[in-house]
Amino acid sequence: MNHLTPSPNLLTRTPRMHELLEVARRYAATDYPVLIGGETGTGKAMLARFLHGLSTSRHGPFAVEGAGAIPDSLLEAELFGHVRGAFTGAVAGRQGLLAAASGGTLFLDGIEDASPHLQLILLRFLQQGTIRPVGAEQPIPVKLRLISSSGLPLAELERRLRSDFFHRINTLQLELPPLRERVEDLPLLAGHFAREAGWHRELPEKLLEILASLDWPGNVRQLRNEITSLILAGDCTLDPARLVDRLREQAPVAPPRTVQEAVARAERNFILAALKRNDYHRIRTASEMRVSKTWLYKKIGEYRLDAG
Image (tube, rainbow, N blue to C red; front, side, top):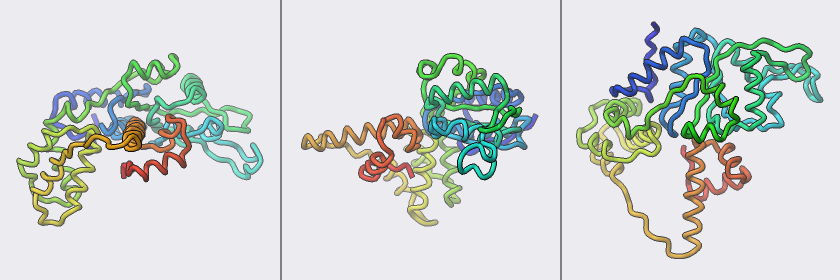
């Protein structure tokens, strides 16, 4: 068996995570579609790469695409590609996403955002194993492994997607636990991220105690961002107390003083929640909120909501 070393987000000492990774190793030996669940920042893309790295197609490509990132009007051309002369301006043929992932893995992130049209196209492809580029006369066989991810609970995802598509992509399932359910991994993860950022000493016990006491709604990604920013804010002699002080900052939120302030705060919270649901993918967030990208970009800057 190939014992590929898990990526940093998957470093663990917890029995639950060890069990999950062992199941992932067994799944990697098959070609069945896999659905990865888990909250934002738990490492779904990392787990998808882990599966690919252990698969028989590990030497093939690993293609990543947001399920809600392609407009319906461009789906066929983006997924299947086109031949030369297929339409005005097609002076050369172009390989689509599915052909580009042939012989490897296609990872579709945020599958809950897949439009009904995309679901139908992918369902037909998974059933037939062929594509027909726009303008082509004959279908082309394409073999790849499909891995999808979603931050929604399974029951809610099933309600959002068409039933036949949901059951097709959910042949095998893996669920990443949130960081609050693997607190014993905090020292291991924090130490790794600190070393990545240039901290070459052990993290103090006081800091690790504080880390374990905090809520981590952004999970491993948030932990990594916090540790990295704290380390890079100082130098090689950075006082660990400064790290503790920053992580301890839990400033109470004062009540709004005016109606305008209350409305602005509610708007900010609404936008932030939508961004988190969509892994800070702006196009998907704008689509979910049914607003223009320009408006969303303006509000992100106004409320300083950029995830960095």
